[in-house]
Image (cartoon, rainbow, N blue to C red):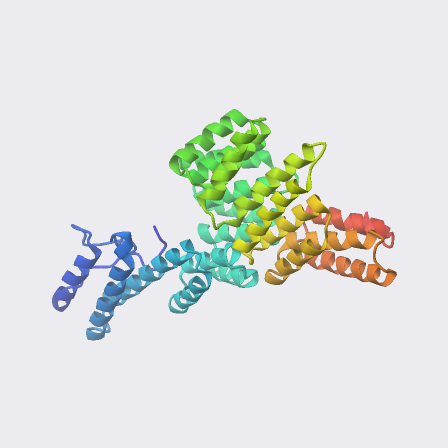
Length: 434
């Protein structure tokens, strides 16, 4: 299932026959003489050990016949498969520092491998935030192959998640889908981008998501995207049908569980049924911060509908957010979402400001964190509780953050609106505010 720099290798002849018999036993694919790279089929618990042996045998054979191109290809392929398996294993176990080290080793050996470049960029975008390095990796991948669908999809996701550049992300995806109309990840990310922008482009989301579900009817990602798009259009019964199918395929699919909970909430489902979905999402991956943040958001929406609430209600929300941050203190999304909810829930500013500054430090290009921090500083400046000098310092910092963030994401409509309101309140640049 992986993407490889090489495509096929041939059975070595003559003097390499003994070596070939050993290698054929290791890869254990009977009847195959031309074996696509990556189809080494060992039991999962033995895979790494077997692959290491393949690497050792291939390198021994290569030392005996260093000019043999087939042997060189096999040695690279075996090393590559061992690297990719190890990386997937480390990522599943959330050993981020070890995975980062292995990615770097893999890139050193295979600097032009598109799968490694794209996977490393995804890793640095979602799991181990280093956004500028991720951008450089994607630039390299697209330089090597400007029409590569996986690299284009990863680039689009980086644009909208990190910079909030929805228009640029949509353009990248449209170009990729024009060349690869059935590419699943591009279709799913296009749905995400269409629904995340302000206002959401529901028509486009339904179009690409329905295409994804039609072309990939056994993909939980595709069916979840289709259900989420239908729910955004208020077509809840149809949305539930798609989400039900997705959960049949993958009962622990977190995006589907969260979407299903949202659908039940919007349909006026009972509190118990709604909470069950969010609880299942939390249990699907107890170490993932996103379900905890979304669960806290659900409880906060419920509090907003009540005529009265208690300190205990807010404590539950804050404990969920605290748990999310403890699970991954380096996740800028969790830090930003938690800060926004704490502000809304308690109107307390010191903890959210700490979270937002940490998010900006971890990811200097993270637009949502920077925008939320600028709004928090602006609110403190107009609160009237600071000294005149401190108020001016807060305004200057807020203005500086707004300007820097807009330089990185000039077409971000909510950011433009917030900065316009800030300038209008100041009254110093009415034309610019307008």
